[in-house]
Length: 215
Image (cartoon, rainbow, N blue to C red; front, side):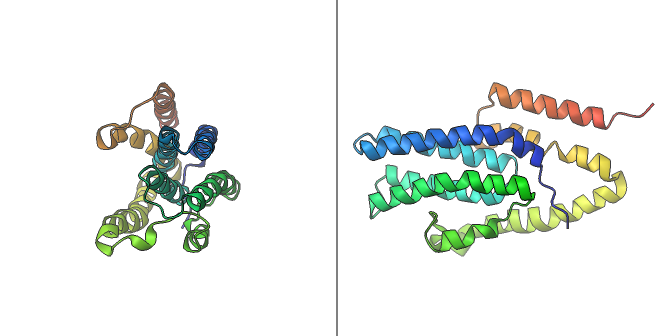
């Protein structure tokens, strides 16, 4: 089945993600130089949370998985819940440096493949708490992202193509990042920045133009 990711949306946010990762890296380096300043580590966690939210908004779950695990490790460092601080800091730095090349690969190959990250997560090269997750905790994500996103959405999208046509479905599908950004405000308590608002308006205008009746 075809890949329905919005790679144009990814291209729009890649620069923002890179800048935010740079800020996270700088905050982590400052914390390494001054371990008593936990504020720097909190800044790092906040930046990683922003990266994770952005990737989830544009529905690139492989990259979002990595960002989420990075945020969890940063939180563990803030709460002093790691056995070896130096090793954890080094692992987090490797992960921060690994995400941009992964996004470059996604953009060039037009494939977001979470399986590429699994060996890195399993061997500890990248941070992960997946082995500590119970089935009951994972079930909502299995149902939502496995059954919902993987099965139900694919089936309904195929039905929509049959009834509306490929062109209209592709145009309407571009609304996904805009809808996610708007829903994130009441559901995730995210703030709409001016850039995001402008992007939502541009996306909506583009969809309306693409679907206007031909004269």
